[in-house]
Image 1 (cartoon, rainbow, N blue to C red):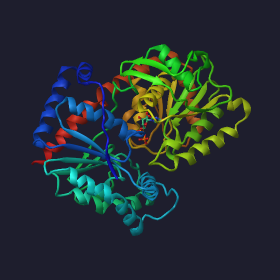
Image 2 (cartoon, protein in one colour):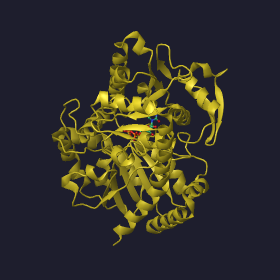
Image 3 (cartoon, rainbow, N blue to C red):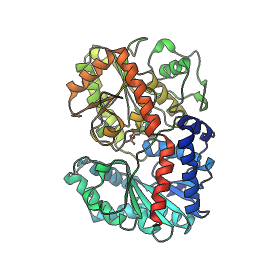
Image 4 (tube, helix red, strand yellow):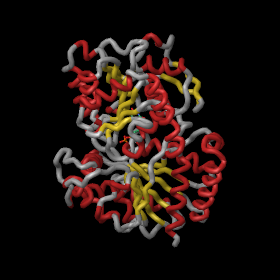
Length: 470
Ligand code: UDP
């Protein structure tokens, strides 16, 4: 099926313009005018497979209201399917990240089932679009819409947020599944140049890194007592526990009611003043939460580790999250009692995206070091989010993270993502030097301001559409 996701947000354009300065603001407005011009009164569509959770949904939640303010008509459509559809798309996603996953096939029968599941969404979308519209489809869940849309709209673009640094047989199987579906797209958009597979390099390709929104509840500045209340809600720093619940918190992104209780596994919890190490991620093999747990408990002598992810029971489009959460919990149970006290597993409620975002914001902000130990990554939004908060991020040197962090300057890269001792050593060194932490954190913030804010998305989209006309 297909649903239109209505997005509401406060105006952000004026604040964004203040942040990026007059020259960039001018470029942004010109870019929006070019996109409008190209649409001739039509609509710019973004299509993905989930309204909340994950990087694409995060970006669209910011982008659509911004387009609105800039006078560009845009809409966000979400496709959904049955369990079989999401099983196939999960397998496909894992393959595009270079792994065999459940080892199941991705042959003609799976492609047929995938296209059959997408058909109602394709039919509905075809009824909604017109010939002036431009459609940007996100990731493998939506690639099957291309054949229905091609020729019916002004242009169709497919944006890939995943990929591998080195080709693998599994990734090639993923591309075997997708390539034919992409025959008729006007252009392909990747986050990372290295992720463009050899077979698509002669096509029109745009490299467009994702961005974060500084005005979203995920990233706005928070007063210290708001951070404390959110931490307490997550079972961290219990001394800051709120007096009552639900708690209404005022933030620059609006008032947020803290009313859902995260499900927290901990054995004593984080104590006031104890260094906080976190990783915020989906529960996914490629995020390697269990690896972070082992690296910290075995190789970092101080500090409390918070592993934070969505409540797996609330995620419809990613059926494996429950499995990887259980795997992490199993690792936690096997720790010694003293080690167990140093780790909290936190599953955040997903019902209210703003509340979820605020909790992520507070935990990132309160962290002394943020880890992103991905085994593969398109572009780690969590990395830029934490850098924006002037945190020191230690990320694996994979995928887009290599472009997001300049090693030793505005964060640290872990050359071999499997190196648990190496990760522990970097984290311990960061925790031991507060001055260095502050300087690196400041450079991290500037880096995100310069390169990863939403105006970049609008200007690169305008260039993409302009080059199409030639
Ligand atoms: N995220 C969230 N709640 C969670 C876990 C993650 O809102 O419990 C957000 C996170 O802050 C980031 C996005 O989900 O904005 C994840 O994007 P990223 O690019 O890091 O990874 P992806 O999940 O897309 O692979």
